[in-house]
Image (cartoon, rainbow, N blue to C red):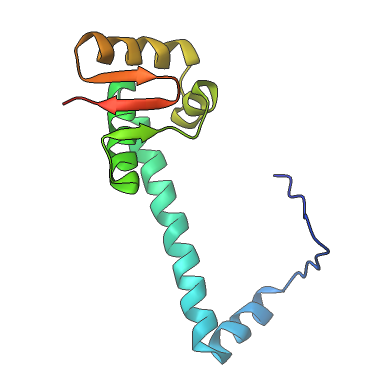
Length: 119
């Protein structure tokens, strides 16, 4: 992974024992660490469950998640089709074919990066 800071930044490295002592010294730090680890576990669980999904299931799951986030049936997709395909672990062609099939079935309508959920 590459990380690029946009402002002056200091990076510190803590030994495991120092991190444990820090967590035990302040409950806010412990709760923050729990929150961070919980988010990581949730993310990885979603990734693992996606491995067993078909392309259509991945796309439909993504649309459902975006519909909850955006609270709309008109979804502005922030990613390019290439980036979306990479997120799903599929080829861009497979994603495009799936989107076309969903359109032909009358389930969605695509207008650039906006997907209208019809059903």
